[in-house]
Every structure is written in structure tokens, then in C-alpha cells.
Amino acid sequence: MSRLIVFNDEDEYYKYCQEHEDRIILVYEEDVYDVTDFLEEHPGGPDIIEDYNTNDITELFHSKNPHAHSKRALLTLFKYKIGYFRDEDASLFQKQQEAFQFYPRVADRKVLYKEFSVDLSKGLLAQVSSLNVKHYINMIQNPIELPPFKVTNNPILEALISPKLHYSILLWVSVLIYLIWNDFSNKNTEQSIKSITRIIFFFIGVLLWTLVEYLLYRFFFSAEENLIDNKLVIWLHFILYGKHKISPSDKTKVGTPLIFSFWLLFGFYFILINIFSAQIGMTTFAGMVIGFITYEYIHYQIHSSAPNQQYLGEMQKYHMNFHTKKGKRGYGVTTKLWDKILGTEID
Image (cartoon, rainbow, N blue to C red; front, side, top):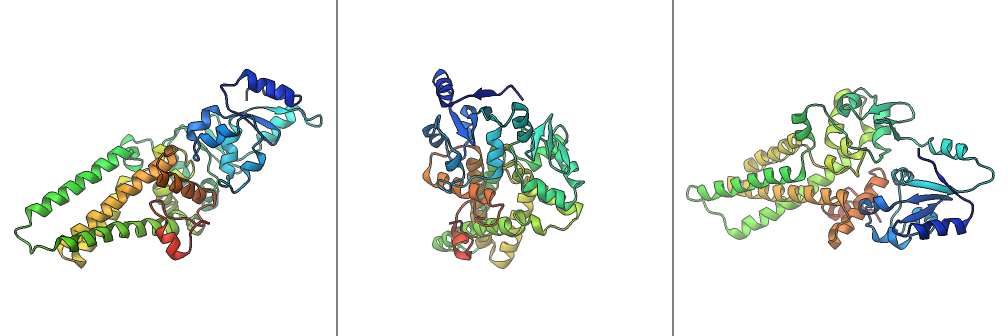
């Protein structure tokens, strides 16, 4: 830890702020933080932080307005600590020792938890698979801002497990183009279905995806407390969602694994074309694909920036509350619709 600045009183503090007027400096619990480098990463946008420049944010930090902050937020704040107000009863050594009692924390490319640790220089998948379910739950329920890490040491598997947003969208747009081409090439061999009917089933497909999304978040992604102590189950949960949940601010771990999205969506494709006619099934499936692409885009945006669009900004705050409440409510990412209907909306 670099040497901390000791402020004897408020006059010294404000003098320092004036000398560094290009920096955003805050006070929390008698400690001083320079959060300038965090502005663009703040989920609520930089404006609210800039409005409180040089002020004490202790009360605001624990207030529900504009939103509550989690332990992860406090750990993130600690990274930007530059000093503290002198306390005659506490030495600098004591303050440093107290600060280092936080778990989890990063030290020398390792993430230290109270009873175990993981090495960020190696693929996390193999390490996580060796944890018991108690330690795994502790890991994903106590997220922390991590430096870049790999899920696996194999670059091909890494690309499939943590795909970049534009690759995922390009892939599924290609699937849509094929569906449209296939539909036109078969229009003379199948009985034509009225356009209004197909439009209705297309939007049913979009709606169906939002329900699938809600169910995944409620009953699998957020059900870690119900996971059985099985290496395969832990391995699967980490690939699908745990890799994102341990460090939600890491936008490279937001994407849905390509293997899973293929299995899930094409599973619905075969169900739909067997329940309905080929045309109606493919139309409904196309709606699901559009819903999935929208989900991928929104999920990426709300974890990687402060969105300018009102709807994205609203969903960002909603989803951040989902993370701070440890996945107890607020399961919708694309829309709040199913949370409203099924009584799990975050107030």
C-alpha cells in the first residue's frame, strides 16, 4: 500500500482539494478517497459523484436514494483510498491493519477469501471446480472488482465460454439471415400463412425469450444456495453465470457462453417446429433470437458504461440492485415485465 496522507483537520483537507482541483476527492467514514479514475466505471454515471466532490458521502453511501450500495461497492471504494483524518487513538499501522481485514481482497494476483484463495494467473474453472459448495457460494455471493482473469487456459474454450459481444451478435444475426433466406426459398412449397399471424407469433417469440431469461435468473443463476455439493454442478454454474457474478464490473465476462446459447435456443427451435407448422415455428424462433440478441446487448451495456438512453439507465439501476440483493429479487434484465407479474419486482 502506498503511504497514506494524514489530514490533521478540515482546513488541511480543503487545501489539498484546492491544490488538486482536477481530481474528484471524497470522504467516507473519516477516510479520504480520490475516485477520479472510477468516474466512468460508476454504474450510476459520473455526474452524481462529481456533484459530491470534496464532500462526505458516508450518509449518501448507505442511503437507498438513489440506490443502496453493496459490500462490493465498499471494497471498490477502498481501492481509491489516499488518506484519512488523524485520530489520536489510532496509529497509521492500526488503520492499515484494519483495512486489510476486508475479505475478499486481491493480493499478488491472488484473490484471498477468509478460508481459501484462487490464483488469477491460472484459469479459474479448474480451481473453482475443486472448491466445496460452501466456499463456492461464499465466492460468488461476495463479488469484488478483479483485474482481467481467464476462465480456462485454453484460448478456444475461453472464446466459447466468454464470447465478445460483437461476435455473439454477428453469429445470431447470421442465423436470422439464414432463417429469412430459408423462408423465402420455401414459400412456394408450403402453404402461405397470413402476415398478421406471423407478426403475432414473432412477438410471442420475443415474449417467450423474456420469460426464459427470467426463469434462468430466478431458478438457476441465482439459486446458488440450493446447489448440491457436486463438482460438475459447480463447474456448470460457474461457466454459465458464476464467472460474471464474482466480478460484475468485468465486461469481458458478461456474454452468454456460445455453447449454452446454441443448446438453449436450438432446443427451443426443434420444440417449436414440432408444436407448430414449420413457418410458425421458425417465425416464433426468430422472435426468440431477437429477444436473446437484445438481452445480450442490454446486459453488456449496463455492466460496461453509464448508458445515455433512459431505458438502459433505468434497467442498469434495476440490475445493479439485483446484484446488491444477492439475487433475491429483480430477475429481469431486458424487462421488468415478469417481475411485475410474478411479484418479484424490486421496489
